[in-house]
Length: 419
Ligand SMILES: [Zn+2]
Ligand SMILES: [Zn+2]
Image (cartoon, rainbow, N blue to C red; front, side, top):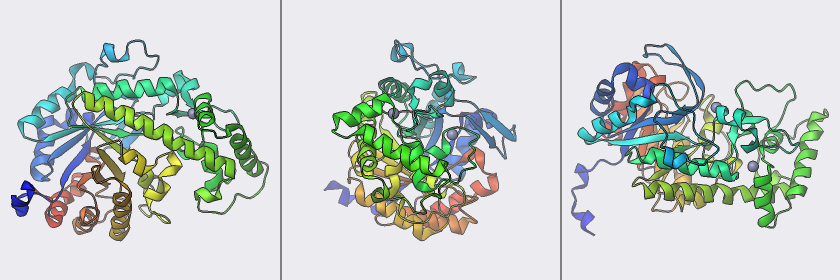
């Protein structure tokens, strides 16, 4: 191969980006942010949220020190893509100025890549307006307005149109967040339960039994009604006062009809990822599928335990090997303090993903995962070492103080990824 003639020392070991919000660029100026990310930090890519969800964020160096975000896209949705669709994205204030076109021009001028971070099925505004496309639990409640069901045909059509419209902004990749099932623990914003629910009950309460999901199961020869009844019985027990089952959840802990039913979700998510990836490729870009399992396990404290995230992706209906076979890129959230955990988590994903699928690891440079530049360097090396990821992304520009972001160049230089 010609590649062997290339001087390996001249090629960075991996590529890197920083996640940002359009609000960060607007507040500080696109050039000022690019000076930091591409210049000071030494990254080669900027990842910008093109479609985002509701949040209230502490934004340490923004003009607003606490920022309220809404669901919606930062561009005018192309009419021809959403024509005839019932679901259309809410549009963010300022979208008419096309901020992503500006950042595309500026990154291109600097020879940098631009990724369009896109939240697909986590959208409370759409879910509240169209409850019939949200996930339906075993009791028949539509109680997860933030989670649009990936089996619903109108949701799938929406995902394709959204993917095409982001790709059409000229981004080098569309980074897909929430292109899978949601979790019970995060279906709305202000969840309460005074009934202690174990991992099994939470999983069962998060399972979707809407008409689209049960129809897919029926076609696959799986008894959806039996699964629903088993889920209802298992959760009902605890709601009636029994103790939750004290288990770390594995597929073999599920009642048999539920286990079969849960497996059908893999095909639903994989086929959606494949359709969206094709749509993105048709627009000249490529899809990076974000697998949130690492955040489900480590978001709160950076202390994930138990199985590697790759082995628990099924909880959101994701089969990493199958999805990896239909998308060119796969992103994992390495939200962990321990470099050894990051190395084993990324290696576990790398082991199941096809070689042709590029693996990216997302790291948080500060609390609760990282204490210092040296710590971040160790974790960056762990994520990108032999058998690890070919890219590392730092999450997130607007959410950490500059003193924390300043750890990035040290980490990249130490791990051999600086340009
Ligand atoms: Zn949310
Ligand atoms: Zn469903």
